[in-house]
Amino acid sequence: MNIIDVGLEFNSNMTLRNVNSIKRIILHHSGVTVLQSVETIHNYHKNTNGWAGIGYHFYIRKDGSIYKGRPLECLGAHASGSNSDSIGVCCEGNFEVEQMPEAQKNSLIELINYLIDNYSIEKIQGHKDVNSTSCPGSNFPLEEMKHLLNSKDEQPSNEETNKNIYNDGLVNCIYDIQEWLNRHYSTGLALDNIYGTETKKALIKGLQTELNVQFNKGLSVDGIFGTNTYNACINVRIRAQGNITMLIQMCLFIKGYNVSMDKKFGQDTIAKVKQFQNDNGLSVDGIVGKNTFNALFN
Ligand SMILES: [Zn+2]
Image (cartoon, rainbow, N blue to C red; front, side, top):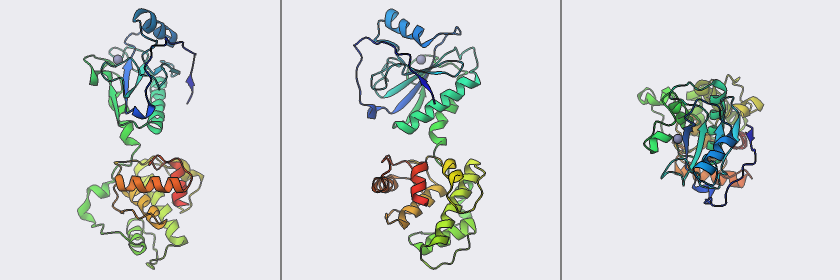
């Protein structure tokens, strides 16, 4: 992703904040159909409103170019009463009357995903969710953007919502893991209660199957964690639940982290993931992404 920094100059009266306090993204539109550069908005906020400078942290033009506005470590000025823990993102246009161009929408998705991956975002809101306004306009793809926060998590698979088909049983040793893998992925493992090459391959096959079924990744289910599988890995984080979470828990268990294998990515799992990340020189964020998957399954 390319974020353009045009070097906007701010007055010195900006309030600093700790970026760890950032919890949400608030989305806006510029509210006018006329094209405006980031400098135009910056100068308006600075000279007409008398602010330190542009109130938004990011500005996305209709052509999809993304501009840096106010630094993230400075409080924005975009949503009264909601600035302290939020990132303000503004899209050029008036989405009461216009539709968002594809290029702009794609950049917005890319930016939001980037922010989700790098900050502790818990909520995505429209300006109208926090203040009395129609911003960002009724045609703004707001629900789709809010959904990005969850779509990066694993969704429970159909099998799980149909619990009475299977009683999944308690899983708390290698034998149980082998039995579970056989039942879910027809992996034909010998139930010898020993973790070896075949069980490792079966875990990878399970992951590949889930990535195909849940996320249409089209991987060959070969039990080898190669580049394609690496690239197909999603981010699994707190509140996820389902078979991918189960497979992650199984890998943690096998590697000596005593986690409950219950398919729920809760506080226990996050603590063990962080421990594993720390022990393996990974960035310790409690989110299972490509690198953590790689270290767990390889
Ligand atoms: Zn707004």
